[in-house]
Image (cartoon, rainbow, N blue to C red; front, side, top):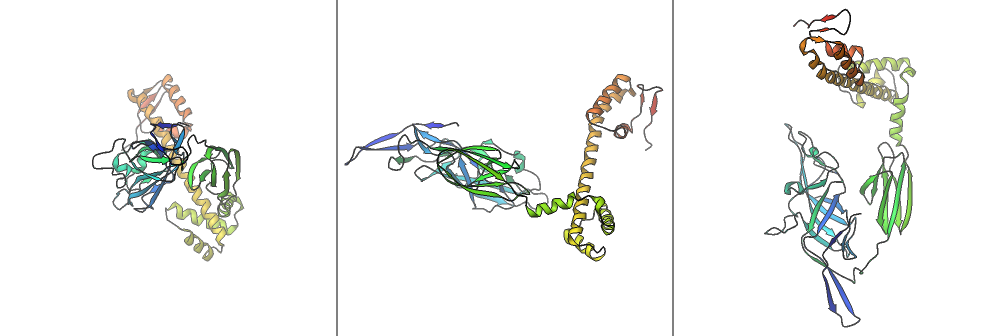
Length: 395
């Protein structure tokens, strides 16, 4: 773990009782690397809403920790505007205002290393508006600019901020040469790839290994289609292994069972109803669950479970057909990019045909797809005997 060390300012004060009391100063302008701990969206955020961030790298003066790793950083939403009509994109921005030192005191923050004349505007200006350099963006920055969509800022975004004033800590609140007692926490889950949150902050996906300071924590493991798993953790040093066995969400399990039942097991009534649903979807008619259930119960004498099973399967079938067609069109497009070069002189010789066959093979194209890709072009294929002449379609 990278540790930022800042200049040491220790003041020795004479005491009337026993010896001396040391003071440690965190200088104004100290750089702190912080991370956003939750998603923000213009669709749901409210201006003035609190924003939670955390410190990534511990800040030390000498050997004394003055701002701990994972220390709380607080900001607020300064701009939240939902997407609007005519393709106008939503807007979202937030400020970063203060960080908590080890003596539980909040230190104000700003966005630049040098304080600008007139004071800091960190409390009123958002990081996007201020043009703060983002060190790490977990998703494409275009997520902020998609036309006609709500603007989103994903958790995990990382950037540098700076203390806006100096802060003095005394040994009465921070012992010198403090030794941090770390706990190594290894979190696994069945299935893997689940989100892990500690005290409400996203920290990664399973399997995951973390070093955390001593203290009490709430650990939550989440994955789509499964019930959340949680436990309380008391970290006192050493190693802790957590293995979360996630249970399928009952609702998701019912949905999955619907889709897994073979179409061949349809009752006669279900077969007729399936044809009805397929025809309506084929005509691109929009149907919701209530309409499906109503039609099934009234005309086809099916119950709700039968109706939704057939409907879900047909929706999935249609989605698969659309995906396959999109894949087919993309393969033809890629093949044609090279084919157009070879056919410019009106002749395809054996070597060129070998190259085209290799391209088609890499794209897993069928003979029918190759025929479709080459249709509409006039050329002589000298790679076959006798040569074949293909004519352009009449316009």
